[in-house]
Image (cartoon, rainbow, N blue to C red; front, side, top):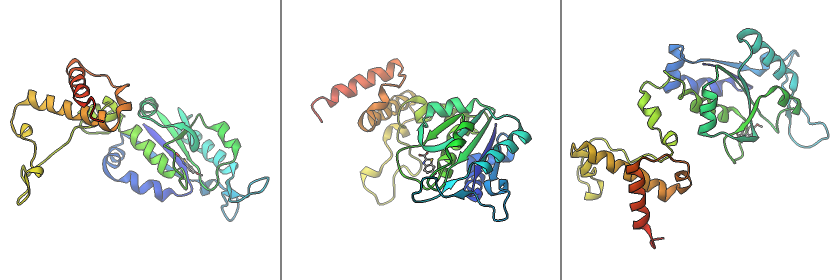
Amino acid sequence: MKFDIVTIFPAMIEQPLAAGILGRAIERGTLDVKVRDLRDFTTDRHRVVDDVPYGGGPGMVLKPEPIFRALDAIEAERGRPSAVVMTSPQGTRFTQEEAQRLSRMAHIVFLCGRYEGVDERVRERATEELSIGDYVLSGGELPALVMIDAIARLVPGVVGDERSVAEDSFSRGLLDFPQYTRPARMTGSAEALKVPDVLLSGNHAEIRRWRKREALSRTLDRRPDLLTGASLDEEEQEILRELKGASHGRD
Ligand code: JBZ
């Protein structure tokens, strides 16, 4: 899958993408990522990318022409992209469902906003306008990284073990069960810091049921909104009924 990211801070994108699972997928060629410095698409001596807003007011606005030229250059070099995403606080919410939809595309361009915003005419070139959430950020680079990470891990071959993608909490619609590793008992610590016995029992049917119960109980407790969209098997529905029964009059 191909990604192009247009930004005035290429280093903000390059370093994070070189690390971890995505970095390895880029090395292998499973992902083809190009970061484009918006200043390379200016034509003036000072490589100016911003200007004052018409109508007055504080701050600066990203100029449209360098962005148009960047998009034209990307298209000339790599073909017409499947999507041009503008990261923006005015965008619709980026969710796991959106990540799934975008992960089926062959080539996505991200436009990262900065300053007080981007010249409105740039919106004509965007096929989607997306936001990662309701908090104030300085620019679209971190949102673009968040979206690329969520999208790319759904691309076959990016995550080594396909099982971890399938079992990820938001794919299943439930929060994760608790994880433990060695040691089974922390030296000099209390009973409370022991790994639950069931996980040491070797009884895989019991372990599976315990994990289901823990995932359901955490979801019911912390994110009950997720349960409306979750697809539960027979056993999970039964455990959930038990948990709901046990919680009556406890809140
Ligand atoms: C985003 C001006 O550039 C910005 C500022 C905030 C912001 C974005 C771009 S994208 N917030 C979000 O995804 O919520």
